[in-house]
Image (cartoon, rainbow, N blue to C red; front, top):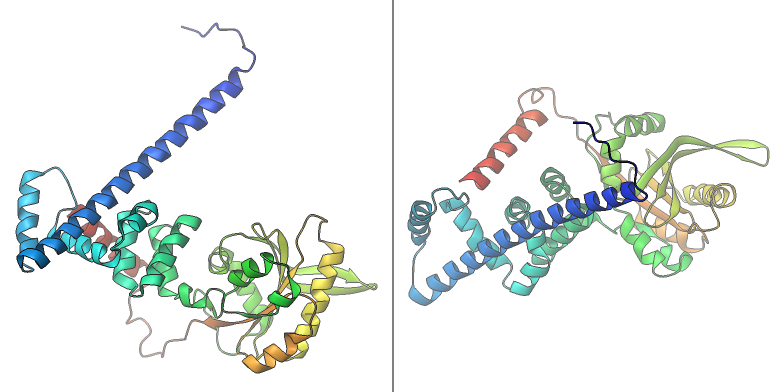
Length: 347
């Protein structure tokens, strides 16, 4: 039967509002289920620790508990001996229930297991939890960030931001830059030219943006600027959506040299004058070098009045010919990781 209802004022807006409300409720329900599950796992882990300490139960109680829980709840997953051991380790890693409720329980159990496996430092664990929440990292992205030691690289670039940017912009910008940057997704020889490095980064722009971090929007490569009737070209130009500013990147395949900072200051000034909107924050310059001498960098940036940071980058090491082909491929490693993930969640 055809719908003969006549158009009603405001109906489309009403329908859109209902759709958004339903989607929001679905997301909240999924988050609530995950939170309750993680809290349950933490409570089970805490109880196991308490009983082992107070009543002298040995490690074998976990095997027995796994069998009995599976028998009592045959349709429920997650009560394998392996997962119960993770619950115990989880409660041991986060003894404060309030932190679990307000922070750790906001990410999926599979993410928590990866952090338990790979991160030993308590502060680093919480940092990866917070970043997962802030950035919405998938499990594979989280694993990549842990393996690339992001916690130890974030905010480590040498900069003059404290002297050239107002707070809190200076602090936010400092945390924006890493040192070193990990370009292991590239396959370049040691004698690669700067244009080859730039081209490779553009060809792998998705991986490059992931390494740069959340908020970077790609504007262009070899971005043309005309200053004093002469042509100049910026290696890479980005706009950072959170900092609300342009970010100029200059690539160098050699050690940092003092004159690099002068050239970058020129680029930053030009972008400020030619591209920056009145509502934008000051443009930031980032020099990416093969290596750097900390003292030389600090001297070069000390009197600069433009915000500039200097970082290094690492390329994937080329394997000796006798080893090439003998190591697993990325696809094989991902398949193995997925198999392990299924085992943890389904047992």
